[in-house]
Length: 149
Image: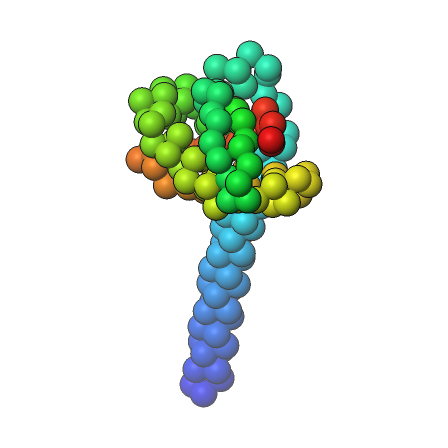
């Protein structure tokens, strides 16, 4: 009888071990999909120029003063994740312009000179404009015109 208890106890341990390993494997797989899943699909799905154009919102030409008593003339193209998001941004145009002008007011020529500085500024704008949206997202902001005087 004691041998039967040992076999039964060993079987329970084996079953528990298998269940734990399956749960850990499932959790690991879900973590992998969460961390790497979106990046893989985004890189493998090319976007046509027409689709990109349909999802892009272009700001008006804006001229404003910057911190070091200079003027800047800029224009941006904002790429969204969908046509609906683009239409929402068009309705929020005044808010988008306010974000851009507010950020430019605190900038100097030296903060807008290099490519890295421009990319940081574009990323900052992207994050702030995403904060305005209830649904959808801005995927990228491009500075398409920049004249500093």
